Image 1 (cartoon, rainbow, N blue to C red):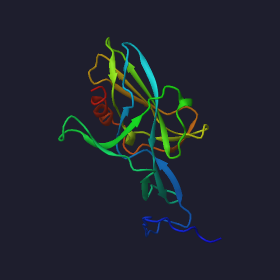
Image 2 (tube, rainbow, N blue to C red):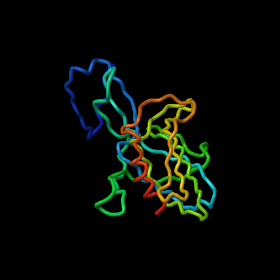
Image 3 (cartoon, rainbow, N blue to C red):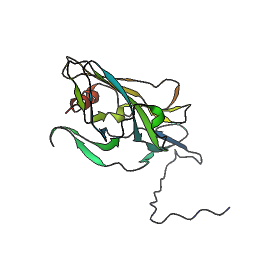
Image 4 (cartoon, rainbow, N blue to C red):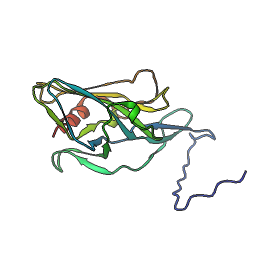
Length: 200
């Protein structure tokens, strides 16, 4: 059969390597930067309460030899760059995203090239907290494939308590097969920096 015509404006890249064989592995993993997520409609979490949200994020496609680390990757679609931090000297470069903050998974449409994060926010204080934005430490999360034909990241739980920095926990989603591991070690530092910008 004849080859399909190349799309107009398509960008080509060539690679030379002794590691690349005729058969390569196409994979996926979480973004290379944290993602600053803002709900379309901000809300408050009552004192002593919790809420679980389902947030979708675009993944990166990877190209790798039969065995070994990826040699090339690209985002499924380009997300807007943003600066995450109190000022230009302290913080990190990330991606910006909007979420409908769905609390029921069935109401979140399955979209190709996007992974779902089960995000649980726990308010262990004695005051209501306004949820206006949250930072997801995507480079520290693994990517999973589940029987529901969705891609999932590790579950993320943020808890604010008497500790002013709060705590951040991650866990593998149940009943899913891992596609790729975290890009960076979970040393706690990235999580705490993410927490510092959570409720501001």
